[in-house]
Length: 178
Image (tube, rainbow, N blue to C red; front, top):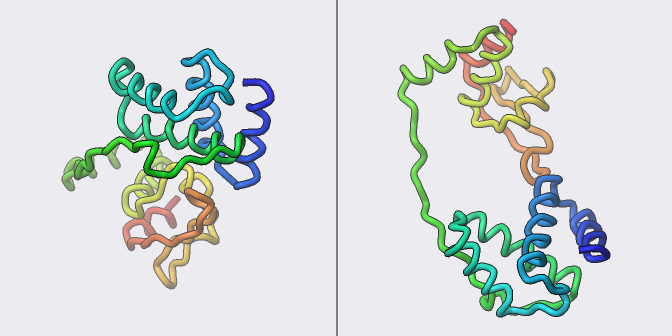
């Protein structure tokens, strides 16, 4: 990928993409280029569609993963090579929406009871009761817990966004014990 790699990383940095997105986009573009064994400036729209077809039919890749790779390739061509196609010309794969599996109260209690100490129990309870991601829980500070308003302030969450989550009385008790 050579010179294109550095230019891609620079564009991703300038736009403030997360490290995970940067890694995924670099991987996606590298795989696309390796698949075709040509310089990316010699590839076009039909090559992108052919690669999508390969990912779906041969690699049997999940539609969300195909869409992520497509987004990486599209970003690369639009922002690094300054070659933009109309949005509708590169198809996005339709994804099935699945209803998440909800745990019963007994199952939740069993999970919480597996915690070997109060710290682990507090982590699990915070993720479950407030819907926080693991990284968000790990980055919490004591002053992010607002017990007067019964909210948790999440700073710099996914996408660099701040948000608030509900703080349950049970969680507050557990956090105070911890």
